[in-house]
Amino acid sequence: MRKIFVDCGANLGVVLRRFMHELPDHDFYAFEPNASLLPSIDANLQQADHTGLAEVSPSAVWTEDGTIDLFLGHHESSTVMPGKRVPPMYDQQIDYSSPVPVPAVDFSAWLRRTVAPEDHVVVKMDIEGAEYPVLRKLLADGTIDLVSVLYVEWHHDRFPAMSRAEHEQVAAAVSTRVDVRHWD
Image (cartoon, rainbow, N blue to C red; front, side, top):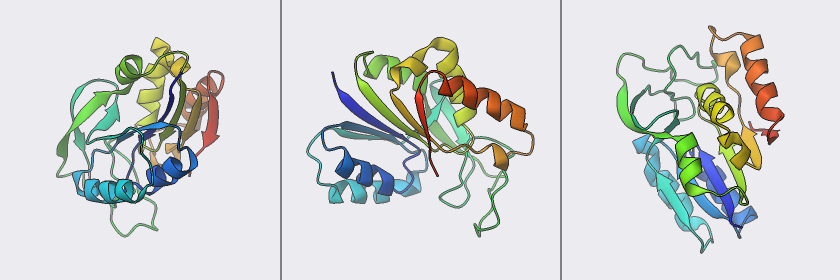
């Protein structure tokens, strides 16, 4: 049995470094599509006192492999999901006029290839609205059952087109299959 931590939306790598310290016996995988953040992730990996596996993929976690548009904003608010509203505390709104094509990874297929049912898999998911389509796919194909613990930051309140009921349906369905912990 392997112990695995997957950071979906690694951002600057600060959280990744923290979990590397807290879970020294885990292998680490991180996904971050914003290329401008990769040097910070690398710096945080260098500062982490971790001798195990640590792989960073410059990709967006998504529902299929390929390329997807990343809409840039403040480093904590860039998204692949159109229609997101940024809270006023950020000084930079999302630029929907100049998307940046980035690699996308089918997270469900990645899980199926990378982990085994007996593995202990911790996932931190902070993917700025893409958690809904990604988690729906994991639920539909059963790969959600490969995840032991899911830390998730929900972004329903930042998408005016998404109803509270739609959020509640996904959150409830996921909670019946995996240990969900709120991430903020």
